Image 1 (cartoon, each protein chain N blue to C red):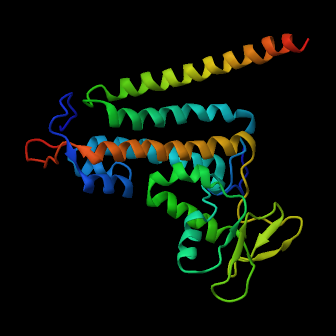
Image 2 (image 1 turned 60 degrees about the vertical axis):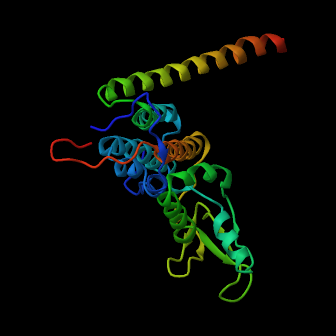
Image 3 (image 1 turned 45 degrees about the horizontal axis):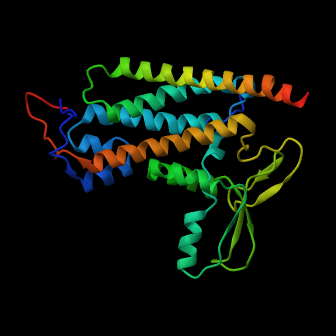
Length: 198
Length: 80
């Protein structure tokens, strides 16, 4: 098994491992020949991330369209408006990698209510969480009206439950940041042999 | 705690009365990830994970007790 040692003299920059660690938690260490270590890193970080979503629901991950609006500004398009976003928390959560961005995109575009603000295909849209008794039209994404008994596309997390879920997802991101740094500055990759392995 | 209509990973769990229990799996997952990154060898991985998780939980209990003492005793006396 390939292991860490107290001797750091043979460590060097490993950009591929660092990139892979960002793409999927644990993948950077697996690439460096430490498959078992990578599996435990993935289990810890993804367990924390999806555990947070299990507790607080989709509301735990909400970038407030921060990155989408940066891209729209680059394209000279008006910014979308996002209600209920937690861009500060997402600054930590994003280090989980594409998984965090995918969950955020599903939340923004698949579950929030759309309210067009300006006309045209590139017009600005307001994305907001549904009210407790507000249904969402799954085709247009716009509101289907409020009425008693309507089931919203998702429910917002409140109080401690929301805080714990959001915090767990952010801690997952910060732990993966440590894993990215560790994989980025590491001993060279060790290939598995017939008699050994990670 | 949840109904048949509950949608896991979409709606929040109704665990408002027991939210503090969520600290236990959080401590475990944090320990799993951190120890996997930092341990020189993986020989004593699970004992190290258990040790760190227990330390986190005990530290949380200690912080909660300290906050309780400050707020319920000192602040209450100061306001008298």
